[in-house]
Length: 424
Image 1: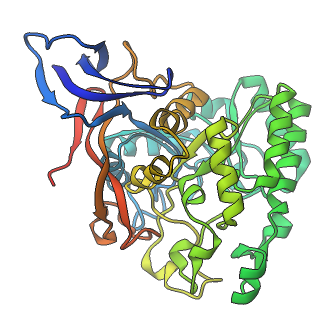
Image 2: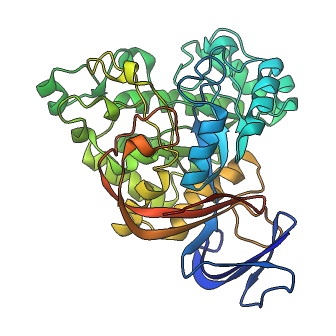
């Protein structure tokens, strides 16, 4: 089938441009872009001036299969992603059991086929994510793993991590780290400071992230491995990242949309939906991170989608589970950065689509002829009040419940097939 999308506001993250024009999809790829007429056999879709951009490539999505399907399944995660303009999910290996063998990876790959969007998987860096023995990285690469990470289980044995990075380097594998000094951050619920003291909550110093990043970057310098920091959230970490880039290390960094749009005071009176890992930071840190994204020092914005059931969130703040769902709220939350004048739409989609796809070696994330027709059509200005009960995720733990937001996904295309249409 040939689709002709006309009267669109085209967002190109490669050229960092916006333009009005049309787009042709044929056989699942973008066939033409510009001011052409519709092919004779095409199905015409009038975009009515809405924005058309590459679909979001979301690194670090937690899906509860295997082991926690009651929190999120591949099907519900896929439906939530499609409704949020996410066309490629990069799933985390922090499942029960962890994705640390080719057999487990092949199982989740088969299960992911029921989702309406593309799902690729990361594998654990060490067996059981326990930091004692590295996984069979070569076999897992052959089975389809796109990266290797132990998520928030930081490997404390530096020798083990060094060996894993050396082996990953020999295979060209990407290692994703969670920069945090585990001793300092153990048991912490918020960022240390006056607010934490007033609330009587255990805090972690922002230096814990800096210390963890320094350790990881030293090992990257020693081994020459490809490395991506999953979340850089404090201004104190940025100079180290900048020095690593200047030294020619193959290092990139990401941040979650929550750390770009919320700060430590949003926790308020112990609101557990705002309990995240790492914890929310100061407003000064938030603004520094936004500037780092605009400058390109931080490459990737992700949702860090982490479903949690009601029972694990409705506990005292210290005991409650960390994390928030974000697949459906990712795009409207990101629009806050655009409406505040911090980022342009092309800059935003550079960080949400182009850069993550490039880092993982995927063909998605581009608005160019020959690229996969994974696209999101959205109205950046459409207002709505978020009702968490309407979310497609099984878990409803969003910090944006009852919040007035702007930016609605109108349609989502994966491989030229429309997998979501907004009926409202």
